[in-house]
Amino acid sequence: MIKKHEIYKTDKWNMMTVEVQGRYIVLREISDQWGEETHTFMSRPAMMQWVNNRFNKESYKDNQEEYNRIIEAFKQV
Image (tube, rainbow, N blue to C red):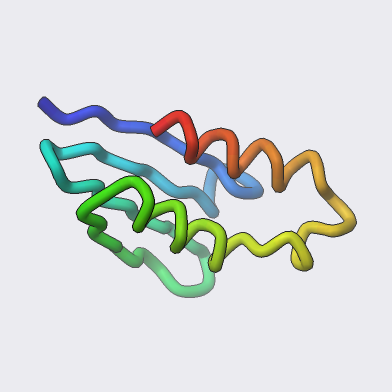
């Protein structure tokens, strides 16, 4: 069974989808600058480590609410 989660970053063009496929977590990052990147994780802690590196607090210091929303959405996966 595949569970799909959609996590929007800034708008509908720049978004992420996360699919839980058994023991694998497949994250697709769609960007208007880089196209589509796919990351496969073996565990939730590995995914959260990538998330914390990708979305660091310094980048969102002006918009802490958006940062909290993104991190919380990943925690729900």
